[in-house]
Image 1: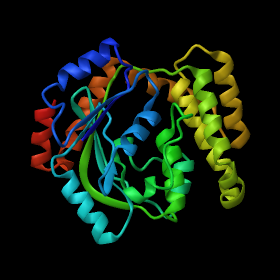
Image 2 (image 1 turned 90 degrees about the horizontal axis):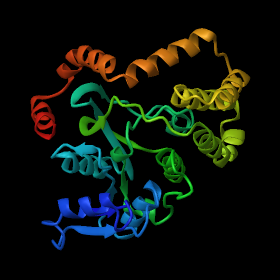
Image 3 (image 1 turned 30 degrees about the vertical axis):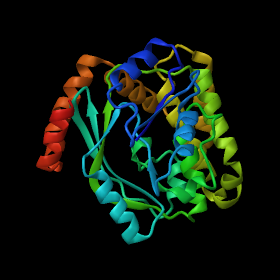
Length: 295
């Protein structure tokens, strides 16, 4: 277990992190690494990767959890199927309640799915790689967001679009009802950087899907920034959506209401509580017990 503390040495959060794991620091199978300053998720992962000696490497963000038998299952699966990239079904929690259980097998073209923001992984903590992948590529530290999508596209390209899937939900992602609205201009710039980075794929391999790819990404961008007060950026994004496909006033209203409801602690909790009644039946008893324990 390699713990990469990206808070920045001497910060309150860094001191709290070090205090919380002090009983484990120094153990043979645990390595604690502090960044002198906050460098971002991509840099933190690269630091961990460079310190790894194992045959298989995975990531665990501090708001996600692994089911206890995850590694036994997914590594056995990867060896049996001879794949170097794999992921599993995922459970989403919302303030401690089961929001969704999602297991999406890879489609016929996983790279196209990634370009169209159809994330079948659910969370970056769901990715498992053979170490040989990292001997060829690392995370791009210039991406403050979308680093998982960006990395996965390059990894899939190396592996000729081959990826494995285990339908047993062995990853739990904790989500929160409080809305995390990014800076609209910064988010738009990252989105455009993402599209520019893979323009070679979009213009050649996926030329027939170009409009679909751009439309999907700008819709995702609009959905993310819709609650912001930056009217100019929102108008620019809406115009881009219309350039590559259709987008009605009704679409805009529905997206706004969806984000507004989910950002409300009261309404979000009510909806998730109702929805979770149906989702719980999809989860085995041992996983339900584990969720109860971690919550």
